[in-house]
Amino acid sequence: MSTPTRRTIKTDYLARVEGEGAMSVRLVDGKVEEVELRIFEPPRFFEALLRGRSFLEAPDITARICGICPVAYQMSSVQAMEDACGVEVSEPIRALRRLLYCGEWIESHALHVYMLHAPDFLGYDGAVEMAREHPDVVQRGLALKKTGNEVMALVGGREVHPVNVRVGGFYRAPSRQELRGLVEPLERAREAALETVRWTAGFDFPERAVDCELVALDEPGTYAIDQGRIKSDRGLEIAPSEYDDHFFEEHVARSNALHSRRLGGGAYLCGPLARFALGADRLSPLALEAAREAGLESPCRDAFRSIVVRSVELVYACDEALRLIAAYEEPDAPAVAVEPRAGVGYGATEAPRGLLYHRYELDADGTILDAKIVPPTSQNQLAIEEDLRHVVDRYQELPDDELRHVCEQAIRNFDPCISCATHFLDLEIERA
Amino acid sequence: MTSVVVIGVGNAYRGDDAAGREVARLVQERVPEGLEVVVCELEPTRLIDAWDGAEAAFVIDAVSSGAEPGTVHRFDATNEPLASREFRSSTHALGIGETVELARALGRLPARLIVFGVEGESFGSGTELSGPARTGVERAVELVLEEAGCTTRP
Image (cartoon, rainbow over all chains, first blue to last red; front, side):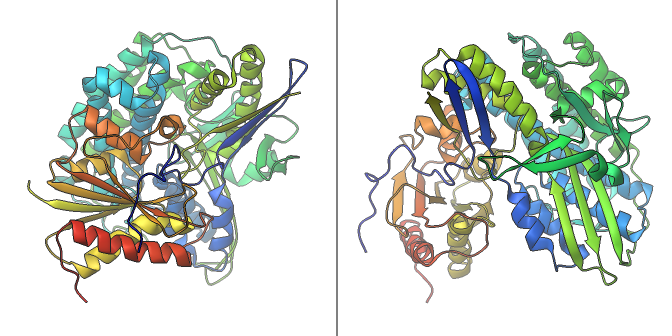
């Protein structure tokens, strides 16, 4: 066996799946001919993997699609399975699911706001450089994220890929006493989230308005997370079961990726900006007040200000988690019985980065015959590309390196799940 | 806390990307006591919490550096970064290099931090390790146990 050496390691040491999160731009005579964002699409593999498996396995299998938002995949899949089987879960189970989801919003938003997005605004190369000069700020972000992880660990049974979720409810419901242990960390997190809003609201924002349709879940009386009807700011209002009648995916030339479009329309955007546009009035009073102080008005179409909206959602997720804990009654049983039946079921929930749609077809014994999973990033892809087209057009005189950085910044506004195992954005620029 | 922690990171569904997880799993199997073993995705707070305050931490991950698949790279990150500029360019998550430097900036590194990279061959969707990665995993297990001062159970 040869002696291990570190000299072989160059710039791409520890790079994993290079090239899957990639972007190409074609400029002809100073005009942007094409902007293509290639996104690794794990759901395709999982859709195939799910066929032939039991409907009960869907939450555990789909949770593996994303290391950042496994709960979203679990929640959309259990909702779809319960829909297919004609079952409704009890209120305490639903409340627990929403609590678990709040945990995921906290950890995912804290990661994005602090570690990925904020350094762009403050002129740092990344979180590391920012941590050297502002260790307290970065510690605050890590502490927030950790609180989200704690909620997920307690309710979900594990922090990265929760194992406690099942079709019909949970394997085990936590006691009131156990949940009470989350109150103090969540109260601290809520304070940190309020500071986060004040902090991000003070950044400088280049104007960058997105003009596409905004699509999010809508639930009367609450800021929709775990269920609701699908609505848009241009009058769309449908049940999740009607999704395929209004949205479609198409293959795009030069790319293997599928792009989602509105039927008869074009690009649309899901995520914090869309949720805030459609549901800001149903945020908690504290989150609303934070938004107001930050000068946020709904609708906010400024992609750069999405960091402030995410911060407001952090306040809301902490606040909502505390409300759910205070109101929590242990369910009689951690899960309701779900008998399989032949049919089709639909699920739609709000992943941290936007609407996540699942559809399953089951046979009478619960075997999955067909699965369709449309993650938020696929839905946002066209909107991101349209935005990048403007960005490239405006900054095309910059050298490649600087242009790449500007593009990365623009992409980060949308918090896309380029891939859970990809650390690179390769930018190819053809200047014909 | 005076402890030795072995941390295997990677995505269990991306072929050879799971090599680091497999190393940690085998280490735990062969040395069931005296080592803390953590298997996780690349999650910064999890990693930092896992090694913060430890006497020594061994992190194993899959790599794709162009070397012969199955090669095991060793990197001592105790005093110098393993991050290159390229590491920070993720739009979605923090890499190991960044997580190490983040911990360094915050004073939350273990007293000794060794990172092993198992060179992978295939990172496509799937749950199987390639032959070369499997060989690399075996070698990495030996190296980790050697450096952690453990005797291998046959």
